[in-house]
Length: 193
Image 1 (tube, helix red, strand yellow):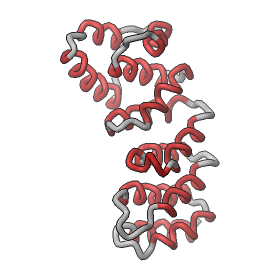
Image 2 (cartoon, rainbow, N blue to C red; image 1 turned 90 degrees about the vertical axis):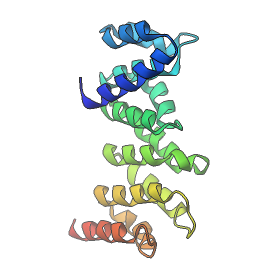
Image 3 (spheres, rainbow, N blue to C red; image 1 turned 180 degrees about the vertical axis):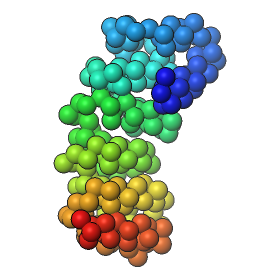
């Protein structure tokens, strides 16, 4: 069991136990049947922990039936669910993933939940990645911006991606007290590329 699945299994076991569903949790964790996992995604009255566990396991196995559930979880208010979803989406290999992550990262109404979509875009290194990160960063450069961690993830992601078209957004981030050092490092990486 990898570390991400272990973490999800522990967290979902606690949720299941609190609802008196420990036996269901053990069965869902133990099954090797992808059809049983896929049914969990569409059955009525399934708790969120069960849908998350099923989608995670399917996504890590490359089963695209998990895509929609994982994208919803990537945009969840609970950061731990976002981490699990991003991990599974990175392994899923679905060509829709980068577009979905870019839509979540650039949505100004969901900025508070954009950290994990931004990190996923960096990991995917898709054509949509750098433009989405630059657009998101440009929107988050105000002096009183409360989502500076998302902006920092954009800066770090743009540095890792090495896209020269990101230079204007990175230069605009240089004067920002919380972003300046990372923006300088990212610009140095662009010069070295």
